[in-house]
Image (tube, rainbow over all chains, first blue to last red):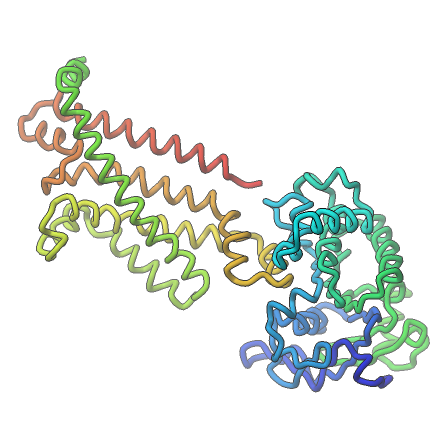
Length: 250
Length: 210
């Protein structure tokens, strides 16, 4: 694994383990450094621990061992609300507030942060353009939108307060293949523009290769390897090879 | 029908009893709401309290109403005035639907929505007031509806301990073996119950699933 100076690291995992209520250990001794501005993919099959790893970053879960540093400060020491407000969170089910309009959904964090109304309005417009949503949809409700449109709103909502870090948990997993490909492409372009630190969970190697600057392979709660897409495809590490092979036969 | 003539002839008394009846129902339901909804919210935050709270409310419900009125009679401040006693008893009966529906309503909110809200940095209070309660509102109103309609019925028993209300006519009629009088109490009570059910049901639908 490549090492880098701590100043470059947005998020660091130091010997992190997580066990559910003293029972099964879902994560064992994870050591990982996520660099500022990179898109790190957490890749693995179901049950590998990738979502658990993600949730440790915004403290939806707390580690049973080891520590996580966000912006050089232990996550434990952050005020959890402040921490979460500087991290954008996008999940597969999207989770838009059904009783809020699109506009109000996107504006959630700015509103929690008491931004002035006109700044919020401007920001919502800007974001809707950024994620490719027609501004006319602002006053609609989530139930009136398609799955793809809803996830665009989800991304816009996560970006609203301009957080330096973005956590994404299989965000395009529930979409049809065509919409998924579209959103992946657009997200890649968006990421090039914005340069956020992104931690992206997926089980899809193709998505990982397309979007990731580095890929962290997880299996059974352990970190197997962290490689660039190119390194990943040519690795002789058995589990990595197995993963590549599984996708080639599809 | 003789009943309507009776009601017309005694309309002042009928109105007085109806208002008394409404008073008992409204005050007890408001109190039950003020206690039941916060309790319902509490048990969503402290699952350990779930069984004891719901269990207690359940036990209260199973006590026969006349018996509950009887139990409370010796109580120091409450037992002194029939009105207070009736209101307390009605309030206790209204608790279960309110606590249970508040709990169910909040638990029924889409988990993804709650997770998204929490993940983006909403405090528990913000989550409760901006997300969970608005989305649970329709179910909570359903609880208010059930509580109100049951109270209208139960309040007829209040007359047995002298707290007034339309039960007066019912008990009087039973004692006199006079159908007119019984119905003069029963019909307005039934109409009250139907009206409460209808109007709260309308509110429930208005605030219903989006």
